[in-house]
Length: 188
Image 1 (cartoon, rainbow, N blue to C red):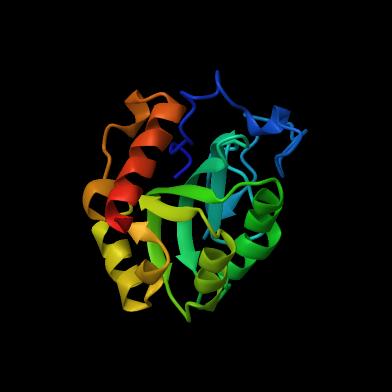
Image 2: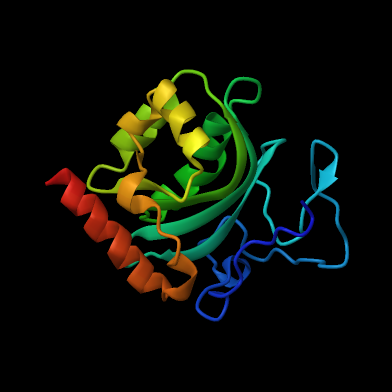
């Protein structure tokens, strides 16, 4: 797992450690020291912790004027044992929502497992984004099945056209425009 790095191609456009509105503003990364681990396996030092024991993320891009953020995840999403959605919502997402973010693009290619529980925090998050939306892009099919099993898909758009393999080739604004258009098409 230590070889899986968050996507760095957009660092020329955005770096959360330099964004004074980011929860990770001022964070200094030591790329020579592997200290964070998931189930005993070290992960790349570029991933950020939001308080979960098994799930880490990276803010790849945030645009406060447009009100969107792109988040990449790695690890096991565990709502059963650790209530990851509660920690994510209370300790991280609410900080972004306070800054005006109401459209969330979640990249899930590196989510290895999902253990569900109830959907109350997903419902709460969905209701609080008001005119916004939540999109799960490139989540593995078995994770999507688990999301559906726990009714997370009622609140998070996923699957179908949101499996965007070439997202890394796009400028972050173009990627957002693409996802936004796909969400609008679903809503209409």
